[in-house]
Image (tube, rainbow, N blue to C red; front, side, top):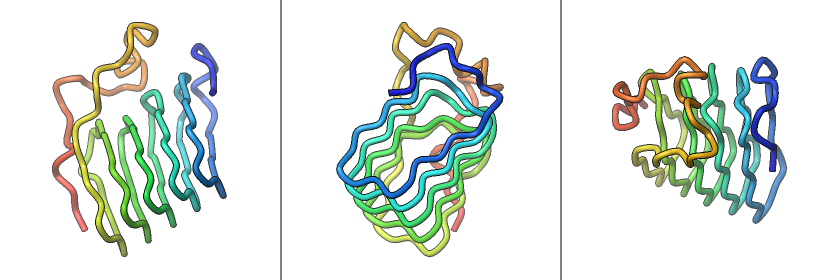
Length: 126
């Protein structure tokens, strides 16, 4: 768990995890998810991009300006995106809208520069 209230100016990376549940309650400028298997990641909205590569059978709850997914399979995305998500070399991905944020994260979308009324989660480009 990354606690709420942290500095959102940095970048964060999760890699080489198996069957983990990760909760990121502070925003960041960018987020990298690499080589995750069977993980659940719940992340506060990110002000920049989220990069997902070589992930399998994960559940990813993400808010971001841009989502790029490479060589991943069997993942479910619950997404708030300000631009069309881009996937390359992927198989069996599913997409749904980002769930409502908990009361402990008021204004998190706006703090990341995202608008609640502008979610392109379903405009996936491949």
